[in-house]
Image 1 (tube, rainbow, N blue to C red):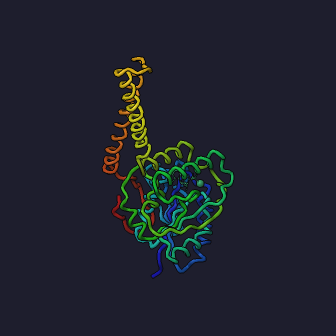
Image 2: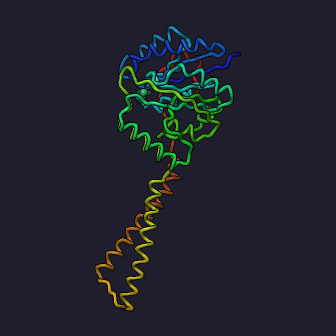
Image 3: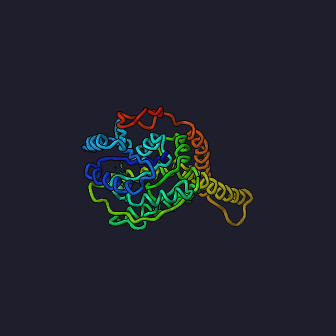
Length: 319
Ligand code: UDP
Ligand code: MG
């Protein structure tokens, strides 16, 4: 029995890339006939003709499996759906459809997997034609994330990764809704190996991730992995309360047991007010602790809805 490797690819507005992607995948898998291959393309509610193209590919080649989601759920969920459906795979490779993740690198990922890597991640060494703002944003994001989540998050790693079956099984137990796919994978641990590559600029179509979407993703991953911003408010409250509390005691002492320096009642009221603000901030920090517990409990609705499956033998019972 050959080991099965499933390549999961989220597809959103990629009509111009699909054919070339398929050809490059075919060429690459042709060089590794020791494995059985499967291309699992997840159509994430593309408004263009991506689905028709995917149908044609599925008809032409039984290796091509198509999962059609009922609407656009976003890349993170599309990836999740694909990985959930890759039930019989020994390894899953995730990659983008826009050819920014060169299929030619896959043999190297597979090689590292065979040597014992459970997650084989890739690091992008150059980002051609990426605007400065985007690069700066990505740098700040990784810096902040690794600071606050305490996870090993290497800057410039991509979603182009290989996961061992063990990781995939563990992943299916993650239930949160606001998700950052890579973040969950990083959180799970496992033996990780890095492979470098330089990304090609997107040749067709435009990047589907607007700044607004990237911002949402960053916020989700920050709130998803820690309540650090809210806790910070709490710490600020403790600081303000203790400083103004000490000052207030000092002022009252002076006021009542009169020394040379007197404070006007107004000054005392101002400090007393600051003291109260400190208490309010502390309470917000406390609320954060409760929200934290609720947040981990309240995640239940299905993550995505499947409209149709092409070339799947049996329907897995995930959805
Ligand atoms: N994608 C998706 N749903 C979306 C947006 C993007 O499935 O709502 C897919 C897209 O087809 C591509 C991958 O996610 O395969 C990465 O998208 P893109 O190239 O736009 O993002 P970037 O390269 O900027 O991360
Ligand atoms: Mg891209």
